[in-house]
Length: 250
Image 1 (cartoon, rainbow, N blue to C red):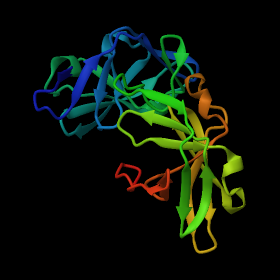
Image 2: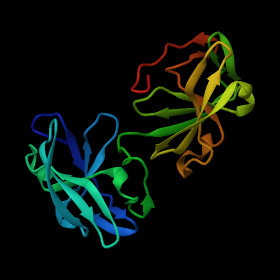
Image 3: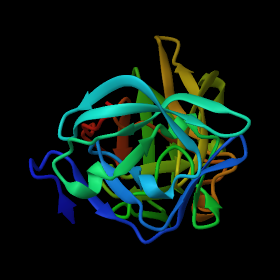
Image 4: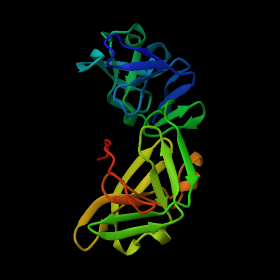
């Protein structure tokens, strides 16, 4: 794995063909993208400037990023749409491959493809893996001293860098305590999650339960199952209280 000279930003090439679209029009098409970890949890794509078909219009503005230095900011323009301030080129980055590449704001693009498949939220991390295993372990979830779920048929999702997640059948959850939420989150491995809050009668705990109703194909085994943030509830596994994990979701 390559890294910047200051060891603050790590990066590496990917062999995947990467395409970005704006309003249905091709912005960039490359077989030489870089995966760049600007944050520890997931990478983003830097695309060679030579592989852009969209016009990159200088804004006259600049930005900076620790480990990458100063960037020139561009507006992305295609025939029928414009994405203001959606591209940056870090011409002072410590490593030459980074200086020659352009970072697109992910959300400003209307579609991203890895090879011929759409990818959502952010690029898939080649060092993250998901395993979903059926289990007969006894999982009990408690909030404010109230048991809100009790199951002996969890599906346990093991994801690199995160604690195990216990996905439980709704029939094993106190659905009478669940309150609908408008919150949604997106995962490039699992899809779009909807949320509930939990009202124990002693307090309302916001967005502590989620469900993937129509997960992506590789995560079909958790479809329609409910999962609690272990960071925010008490989880008993085979009768033993588990320590709350410390993650960026805490």
